[in-house]
Length: 180
Image 1 (cartoon, one colour):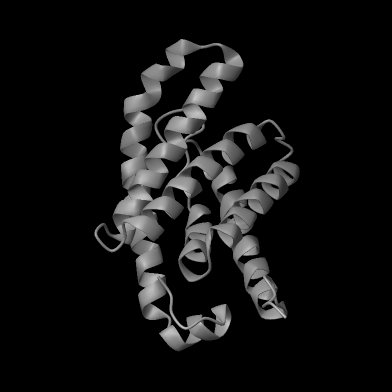
Image 2: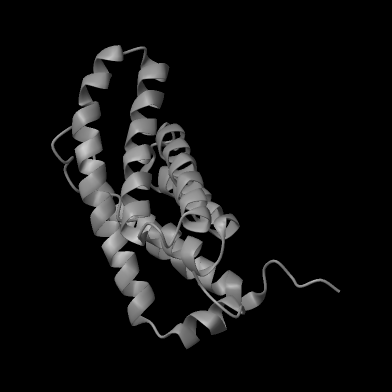
């Protein structure tokens, strides 16, 4: 028989990562915007990025989808799904490609920076497409700068998490012989 995609241990860890991601999202939602309307540091992404590193893109996408849907329901902002979900999917797809195809030639921090910039750019493009406001493209340089800063912070935080937690703990959680 083949190995189960989701065993009880993995589901428990994914539940904890999703809960932590949702809590970070909800706390960020209480903060005032950074520099431009709607801009947030993206701390919730640290948990899906951690899942990408210790598991695979499948688990990371599950966390992104769950956080986006639950976050929209808890905040009462269902329209945020189109921004958060598209930004999350694009950034996680890029992170997956970079992490599994280019890493370790580029660092986890670099992957996180690229993902954060793509997340912000994607959300801005969706906003312009939905509301037919090309003037919002003028925010792009600021969104890119914020993406670089928040991506570097998230990448550094995830690097510390992965390095500080003993490898044996990750191996027990993942059930595999190695981690990224």
